[in-house]
Length: 189
Image (cartoon, rainbow, N blue to C red; front, side, top):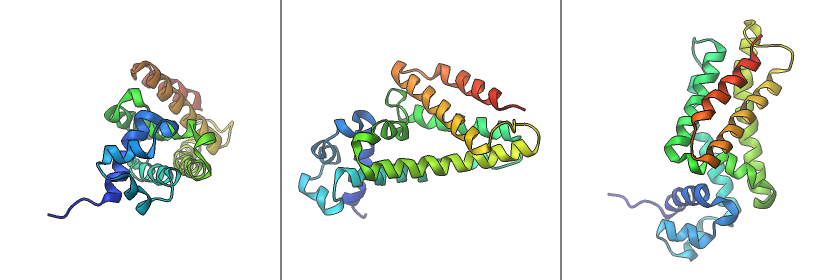
């Protein structure tokens, strides 16, 4: 049976440490301790904590389920299902720790350029994916054309992330669904 790689142990452990402690609250020692590897092995795989965090942001994005954005359901239904799936992902990893992307976004100013760029790339790609569905809804007359699809997509994501931040504060997602429904209602034509 192959042994798990040290790099993968570091990535998986760091994701959990960053989720619980944030970028600034986590040290390389915290990460290597959680991974059960010597501190010196960290620098065999990553040039810095910032480089590791940027990789985790991109890994988190690759693990995001966008399948709900496809299909035959109405665009508003697809958007709702997509964001419900995202809420489920946050619930599975701990509402009190919030969305990992939101955690890193909140620390971009102090986490460094690599993290800032990674978060921006992920948010841009997510915005593009949501905007595609909104454009379909606009073409079908289901979603307002008063604003560009990309602007509405950013609004929807920002509303969701804000509601996730509030849920993190209270350790409870009960209002998140209501907030999502309010944001989706604002998109109706």
